Image (cartoon, rainbow, N blue to C red; front, side, top):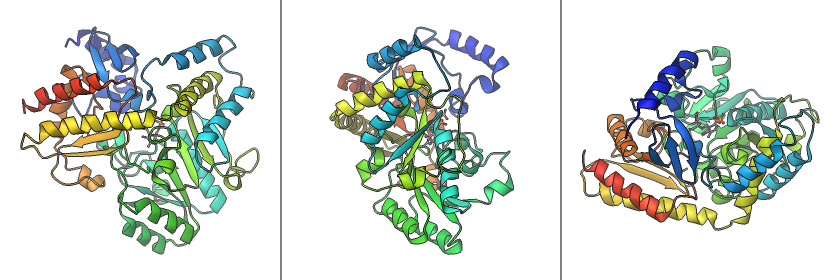
Length: 428
Ligand code: KE4
């Protein structure tokens, strides 16, 4: 692999953009080395500016579930662009995608579109606080809900990757209202409710954690959160920015059979354009301005190009019932292949998988929360990452991320990935 042009572009970018990137995890800081710069992508493949080709396992951190430059999405955006790119005035298209999304999401009555997953989660928490008239929230160590102040307390993803799970700039006043529990630990959550029985507006949780690597909920965890919220009059917010429309049409709520009071979305719902959303029943959503007095707004919310891309994406996902089975089968094929290689080497590892979310931790203990994810051998992860990159396999550049498979990956692509994995691991 040659990286000359990427290196040159990265140097230029660092002169005008902090760290040379518009989102920290892209900078390869934790894995070391220089990030590649992408020229274009199609299907399961990325093409960098040095002419290298990669099989893509991040799918733009989730959105490209159908593969890159998926024709119906591209066509929808091209067609819509000729009508104008933004109006700040309602369009029928917004009603169309809202209705389509609500058809796919179980038991929600209304949805509001915003411009990112962060905005969706931030708005969902404000809504929960407005509805319950309470101030505190519970989040889980290592879970990531975007970069809003209330969430940057022991957050996952890029925050923990760069060793600042609790970011400077978040005030003590904000932090006091964010209570923390270990993921998959109902006892800790119960203690928080006993300590603040009438002060907790909501629990916000990734129903399948994807920002510590992939960590599925243990049996009874989500059901227990549901029961505690019902018992103490708090709202349960499922952050489905990663899992929504990825684990099933109805996301984790459908796959795991637990009802959230508010669900947030991002990534897939925008078809690769900047879209977030949050949904709930009428009795909650009608508190939102202009219907109610919980304020939330956005110049580009419901942007027609983004709505056109998202609608084309949702219509495809809704029409392809076996897509989710296919994706899960491909991900299982990858898991089985990786395990067949690792079993032959005395390397401690854990592979966590649910549906098309999967991750590999170099550790000998089961990874069920941040405390068990953190001690993973990151030096080993970094050589694994670069070994795979040199083999033309693009993985998340951090041990604290999930892989995201896309439907354009063929079984041959998966088998090639396993072969590359074998040659990398056998060099350890
Ligand atoms: P955005 O604001 O980045 O669209 O969404 C924030 C967010 C909220 N909730 C969950 C569960 C998320 O995973 C995310 C964002 N995911 C990261 C990847 N772990 C985005 C990648 C990045 O930060 O560049």
